[in-house]
Image (cartoon, rainbow, N blue to C red; front, side, top):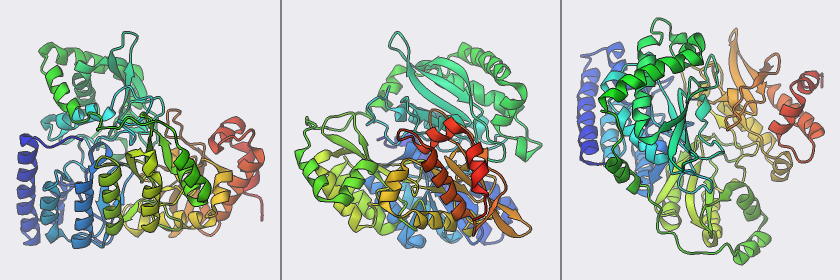
Length: 552
């Protein structure tokens, strides 16, 4: 895990003190809310429906036990005893008082955390694969280059006031768990025929009002040239991105309007100019220094002999379900990746109480080399757990109501805060997710349905990633009444797809029955154990259109 250097400590400390003074001026009435807004946004502070919301950066989703305990302590002391993990691997506090925010930032700084550039028109928190450093088919740990990008982009003077917010994601396996093709820049770590590591670059992805899939403009950018290439992309966007229309300001609109080929031409031209100076060549000694922070932990030499595990699975059906759904293969024999669902039946997706954070911190400290991850699907991951410890981990999670065995199943939903919190939302998201969760609570039924991802957003800004859900739900307002538009066939993995609109929107009362019908049509249509997304790609939307709107 990366640790702050002297520059990081100084930078964060100075920013906290600056913001403390700005908050004091706002509380004293020396500056207006409009004047305060750009200042607070650059420090991760939003003003929502009922209170301020503070977004804490979790670079590439990696946390230490100490950091998670501090997040729990802040939740108890300054909020309402919980935090909300987001689709960008961050954590949000929904109820901090403005007067307390500088103290919260001080607390975060004490464990090498901050809220810098988690909002505003700048390069946001770099996200990556929650299985980084543990995945079997990984080219290299993607957090290494994610950290390089973090250092390059933090307080970059040229890109502090971009036309719009900017998001970067990095993946290093064939299976994309970082949703790189729906980011402003998506980076795929690859290896060429010579065994050299480089990067494929996708540009212009994004969701929101105009969902688009990123276009590949770089086939193999050498490691030493990556920052120069990213700088070239950012310069082209900064020069040509729309600033006169909020809805056309993202880089995806620029790429769409000028075309991927022209975007590539302009980037390559800028790239050539930057390379002439050599200023952004990545020095190998700096890469080596950063890479050392992400070296493998002290894995034991174990075998995959799992007699004790098999016996425990046979003796406990709940544990058996949990192992099947919530663990994944590890690159080292005798180890497993553990996914912790933050989607209890009927709960709020992504919410985690302070007590639960302490439990997870203790488990990470005891069983996973003092490290955990936040996923972009609003769950947590212990990346390196001995198989012999899985039962102990499960028992502790179960006691804390964190052992719901539903990862990748229909109740493992993504949902934004919606109209319960957000002043941009048109409709509620949380009650919809809760109703669907309760409707499909039976574990045997969930297993029969298999992998099915439902994503819900409370408005067109798509913070719930509804466009890329196998079933996507978008809340809309029709003359003061909440309706829900449904899309089918979306995907955020290596086969990225934007969902197709099913038809007229549903009322809140009719939506759960519509989801039931969609699932039934899938089950009646699937072949040879197909997943929902496989069946949809085979038969298309027509069978669903023809049957979902039939009278009960």
